[in-house]
Image 1 (cartoon, rainbow, N blue to C red):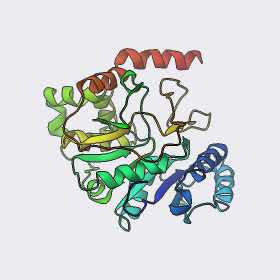
Image 2: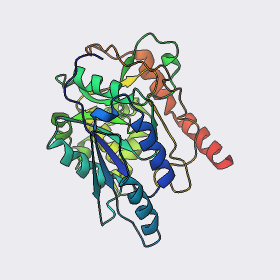
Image 3: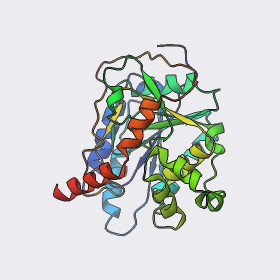
Length: 301
């Protein structure tokens, strides 16, 4: 282990999926740094009476969690939804800590996930060009057989990520510059360099068709020319495609190789420039063709 700042607290957001939550917590507990890390769990409230019993089952399990330096459970009576839960929850935690690691209940992490995240947060804490550290990577061809531990990307991932207080507090969740942006064809084309779905999601967010913290996060990242640090081998995978999933549907497109090495020390480098090959692969992953094929496969499955 390299010398690091104080370990970042882990913010875990849960809802009504007991089995997924158990698998998430069990994997997190197996992390090398779990016993030295604080776990803060946010439990969202039910949308209706039917969801109440499932959420109570989840909360009963949450009360039994051990294996961490400290465990705090924050249960909401109302249903906030994921976007509001994350924005309010992360904001409250970062008032008391300089950085935080964020997970949702459908993510299973590798034992060295916390090592990678904390080392990344420590290395880039003074580099304002880096907005976040991701524990997940897409199955990009360029990552295979890479000798590097990381790469830079322009589109943050919402699957297991870390951020610092100063960068989080700078985000404009109201998207005050949206009107100017949406009338600028060059800006829209540039935003879609992160994926052909970006502008469409941003429009849907503005129109109230979706409620996403992530697309607003990515919009802020784009406007300020910021990058995300990704691992070349993923430190987690998602199990969030069950019938109780709120924001996901069946897909195998995001299946990726995960790190089984047990490696605990990672080499990072100061950001200088983006790799055009990686950008091209990232953009191709979110192309209209790839997304259409994914929808067809989902229907068939």
